[in-house]
Image 1 (cartoon, rainbow, N blue to C red):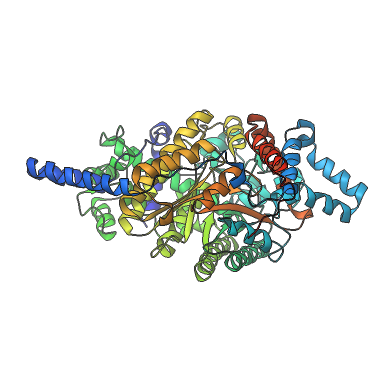
Image 2: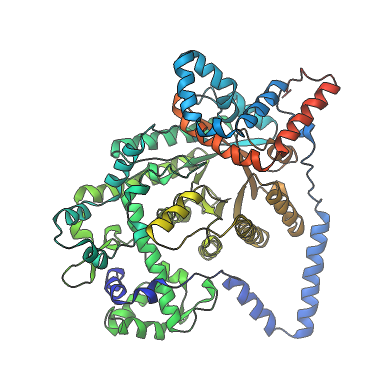
Length: 629
């Protein structure tokens, strides 16, 4: 694989040349451009007639579609699945979540309550309040009644086993440092005679993709995402079995269900760190070569490198001799059109590449980068392969059980590798329908680039694109880490910018659904304006909820006034349904309290709707209302 030859050239390139490029938003796809060029070659009068016919036909089709309209103020419909005690519980929990002292000290208060009340009464109290609001039950059997009730009112489930280890900060930091640093790096650190400044200058690894003890506890500054820390391979196998059980539970309790997994639960995070760095540098190298051809002002997928100029650039950089460079591209069946774009370039890192050959370390004597294979232990090599095997096992179980697998997003220093590995699963398992969904965090500056590049790849290769769009769960941690360690903040500057990014990504995927019917998206949002934006765009494009291409998702116990009206109107809508023993989901409940503090302080809407429904039932003599299904 020529990638290892390119890395020494990357080492010799100036850092500001190599890493200073900013990715730009993608515009129209290649296919759309080709369509426009073909239309331009037609006789103008014929083109006008044909275009008018197409437009009129599209308008007729859209006018025949009933307009989607949902009343999110109709509390009777929104809370039809809840008895009055459940409404009072929601009000109580949301009110408590708005009290700063209770939220800040929630762990201490829960510990004290357990000590005073005893385990049995404590569990009963939790099930009457926070646990009952946000968690479905303790195991696969106890969650079935809630799942069946929700489904009766049009809401499906994304099962999520939300148990985490209760580690101290010191324990978490130690586990993270042990699992994110290779044996070779540990050995070099212990035997190096260089000063810290010398080591920093010679170390090719970017700060962002190295472990830092002050951020070793990845739970810090994270609100809604559960966190896994690597212990050993047996623990990863245990996580895999838990995910398999979750997949089976989803298959047994709902139709067309989802199950959520996290990559960091399945293997040593060192692999994700190093592979992410390789992928990022590979894309930056493409940007450097595009700049050499004067293409750096163009949108990402519009940048097409002329093959001859590209070969000359690689030769000048010292990547290899001319015959080797020519064989490189012809051997990969690339460049037949005379140009290379980013997707062609990315394909050079493929499933036939030995992963370890991509992981590189600096040679202290020459200053060049070398493959890490000779420095990588046999055990570390096996750990990488086992992680990939676990992913494959989970994907196969999901397909066999008719459950769609949703891969959660994680921190930006892990995410490039997570997205690439998810994409490889999509290439295999999304040929006939969307079985694997990737998650895109729209608070990232590069979110639109990531979405548009992956959509274009699915279009070219003929598989179903599956995406979950979220705003993101790691903003405070990501910003703090970037500032303290010293790299560019990957997050959009403010909430409004994130909203614009979310809607931009969403509209792009909706257009793809409208044009090709081969994409699927979950709008995972508690933002009512975003949901209304989605409905508006679906109306404009003539997309029907019965197509089952656009899904909506919210967390259990939150935003029922959005989920249930959508479900009863025929939309595919899902609740993220956590489950697990009371004591073991306390970290999850702690974060729910923190998240609700922000939501409840920022808006009184959900509480006011709950009060409105309670008052309606009181005035209509329906306080004893029980859901019928």
